[in-house]
Image (cartoon, rainbow, N blue to C red):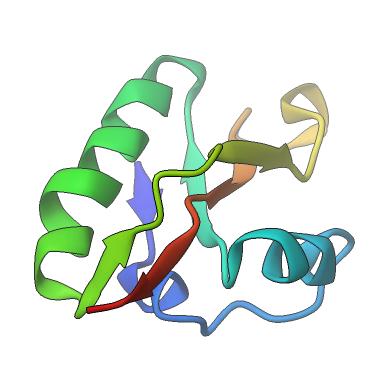
Length: 89
């Protein structure tokens, strides 16, 4: 699973849906995963990144923005922005 923690902190900008995600949830976490890794991606967001980030959940609806058709990706990966509304501690 490719998981770029810098993207949790806001490095991801633009893209087909990037601005939508930023407007709704701050700055989305970008992951490149296989179909069986969705749960792991969400778990890593909450257990690895969030505790040391200086942010906390706003306890509002979280969602995913799917950026590609995995059948068209050379490695079959799902490119996804995970949106969890957060606020500074």
